[in-house]
Length: 509
Ligand SMILES: *[C@@H]1O[C@H](CO)[C@@H](O)[C@H](O)[C@H]1NC(C)=O
Ligand SMILES: *[C@@H]1O[C@H](CO)[C@@H](O)[C@H](O)[C@H]1NC(C)=O
Image (cartoon, rainbow, N blue to C red; front, side, top):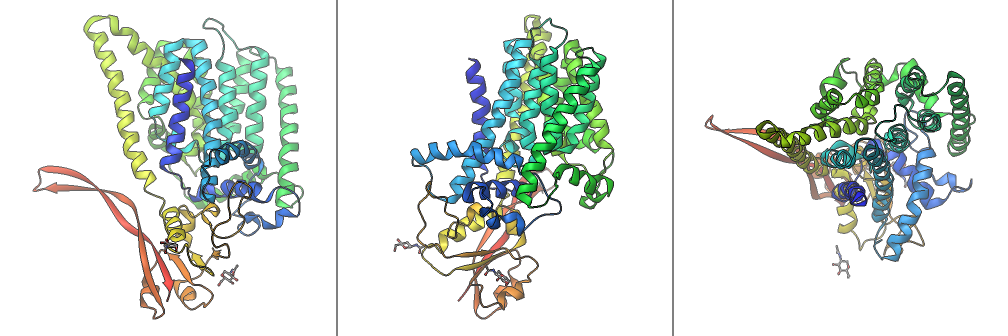
């Protein structure tokens, strides 16, 4: 039975990967780093081919997560090749995402096991039900954001703190030390904002006498120095810049120089009012119930409001900065759900409790159904480049310009099917392998029209191509564009999905 629960988590994450296989701009640094490691290898001559030297982004980011992900992808690729499932480079992208989804499912399965140990089988099962019916975590856990790399060690840390028999009042010092090592590593190497979760947890461990101050300082120093050594070695090498500690660099750039505000700021309460309710859906009220009915939940949740309060001080807010609290809150929600189920023996009120729980889960499912549909229809760049490869499969000497919008909405390196690298020995070479996929930035449509080397373009602005004599627009690519509310004579209200053309494929005649 337990294994089935873990498999349900795995199946959910894989389903999201297969329903929405393309990626967005946030994922692209780590996706392309993984691509380059898998395609070219890591020896110093190979580095010249890497994408990040051409498109470095605003600040250097760590290669450690991508390096680990590439390592995990190799067995997935071998298995897929043995089963004859790999047809194109794009299938390698799916393999990468499947590998990440699998490792994050493992992290959640460990939290599920710890929940079962501490609160019983039913609470563990409800944790799975709540987590699998949410949207953001399952949709994103197979997407190569640094936050999703950090999610795995954070979940292991949570499971270590949680995993003990129902009556034990504290985790063993070993468990708490190991979890702090994992959190320190995640903070230093992967996502600096985790400092705001790690420090409150360390203080809690000290105040609740889970461990001694001396031990905390020793473990903290050891973990910090080790993690700094790892990131400096790996990242100085891949970025060819010594010394480089990307997360510290990013912290300096984004927080001390205030550059993160350039990405937009939100009011201080935005996490509480918008992001967290969206992440949790009906787990939010259930987690409050869990905290009310079981003091063990309160001890588990203590670092969460502190983390949220501290991170709310930063002006730039994104839901992914607080994703780590979702599994913890889901444990609390599962405990609340268990309480509701437990009331079923109490006549009419008990039945209402069960009905309420069923309604909350159904609400999750409905919201997730809509959000999954809408989100999976939102990768026009991926759709366009896949279609492009199909349309011109029999042509050689193709030189296509890929516009900014396409590059940001799914046109990843893995979709550059007919140009090197070819991922031998996993894949066969395509029919034509001399294409140029050109992502040069800041070219106007007119620049492209007037540059004779371009034979094709994938563009978000078709007017110049429609107007030019020697060009024609071959196809348009549609994507989901939002909801519109329609009223029939002021009475019947209907919600309509609106699609619109987002990209155009143009060719030189
Ligand atoms: C490419 O060539 C093959 C074999 O000649 C043909 O069957 C196929 O329809 C062609 N595809 C396109 C898109 O022109
Ligand atoms: C891509 O386009 C730019 C701008 O036209 C050009 O300078 C560059 O040489 C092209 N890249 C390749 C590999 O041909």
